[in-house]
Amino acid sequence: EVQLLESGGGLVQPGGSLRLSCAASGFTLSNYAMSWFRQAPGKGLEWVSAVNSNGARTYNADSVNGRFTISRDNSKKTLYLQMNSLRAEDTAVYFCARVYSGPDVGADCFVYWGQGTLVIVSS
Amino acid sequence: EIVLTQSPGTLSLSPGERATLSCRASQSVTRNYLAWYQQKPGQAPRLLIYGASSRATGIPDRFSGSGSGTDFTLSISRLEPEDSAVYYCQQYDSSPPYTFGQGTKLEIK
Picture 1 (cartoon, rainbow over the protein chains, first blue to last red):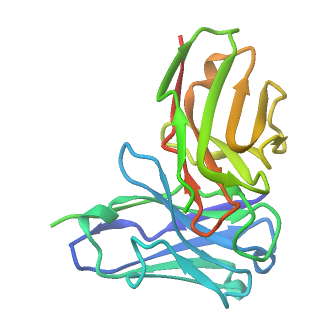
Picture 2 (tube, each protein chain N blue to C red):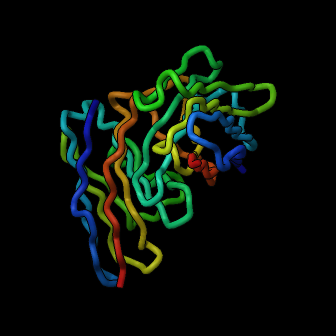
């Protein structure tokens, strides 16, 4: 059974940093591109960052570019999101998700999602 | 960036009825790389439809997707109370960025 389990969320002050983790099981992580999404309270879904299967290519939404870094350690079966210079508007539930079929970012939808981890940016 | 606009914002129907949800793109989704997701409160999104019309594994045939270009539709027949949720369309044709519609809330009363 495919499982994605996020961790690392919590309360952080504006300007602070946080690192999210997404532990993958039930499939070979190194075969698939992965992404992070987020959902602010009562709002819709927003794509945040993506990484290809070997970690060589990463992509960010404009809203987080220069502040967030996606990475992966396939040997540890884990995806990461390093979040720096956090702002109040980054408050959201963060989900990791696996693409449907392949190693590349783009041209693929998301079939498996974790349950999310809540990040609150507040003083 | 492709902007997706969903309508209606909220849809209230009765069990057994048919729901029709719309997703309109600001420019053509040329390869029909359009997905639909269902999200219930406190849960992760669940993939329903990909490639505009293909059902994901385990999705009942009450759910169907159609459309091409800029206009797409999710239809749900024989509504059940458990279908109450927010439904999002997402394009993955011109991605990244992956973009979503703002969602349609479906209420089954």
